[in-house]
Image (tube, rainbow, N blue to C red):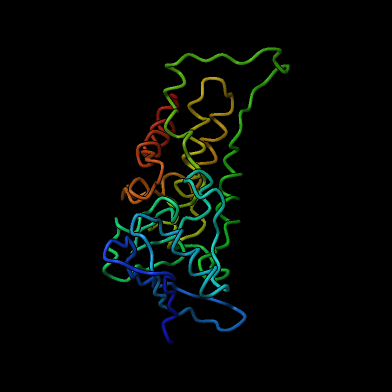
Length: 252
C-alpha cells in the first residue's frame, strides 16, 4: 500500500523544529476485510508534540477514515490507551521525541479485547468486570446528615488506588487476560481494593468473595506488566498482593 504523506506548508529553514516521522498503524475495518493490515503514514511534526497530535494530523489531513478514541487529551479520561512501539501507553502523554522518531512509530489497539475498527476495541467486558466488584461506597443504616469523616492515615491506606482512570492499560497488558478474557483483570481488582480498604465502607467481605472466584485475584501471576503499563503510576501488583493477603487473613 502506498504511503500517504502530509507535507508542512510554508517556507522551511534550518531552524525548523519539524521532522519527518513515519506512523505505522494497524488498520482494521470489518466492512472491508476480516484481516488487519499495517499502513504507513509520513507526516511533518514537531518532536515535542504527542503521538495523539500525530494521529490527529493523519485523521484531519490525510485519511479521515482513521478511527481511534480520545477525549480530554490530558491524561485524565484514559480513552486513548493504545500500544505504541509495543507498549501500552496513553497517546496524549507520549511525546514523539521520547520514542525514537528516527524509526517508524508503531501504533496498534490494546490487546485481549475485540477490535471494532482500527484502534478502537470493545470495552464492555472490561467495564463489566469493573461493575462486578461493586466500585462504590456501601454502608448500612440511615443516610448521614453530615460528611463521613476519615483520618489521613485511613485515607492513605487506599490512596494509590483512587488514581485509576479506567484506561485498561494495565488489564490489556496482562498475559493471563490475553489468554482468558474471563479473568477480572488488574483494573477491576485495583478498584475493588480502593473500597475494600476504605474504613467507611462495609462491603469488604462481599468484594473479597467476588475476587475469590476462580477468575478472580488468584489468577494473577505477578509479572508486573500491569504496574509497568499504568500511566498513573499506580503500584498495581502491590494492590493485588494486598487483596490476596486480605483474603487469607481476613484483615483489611
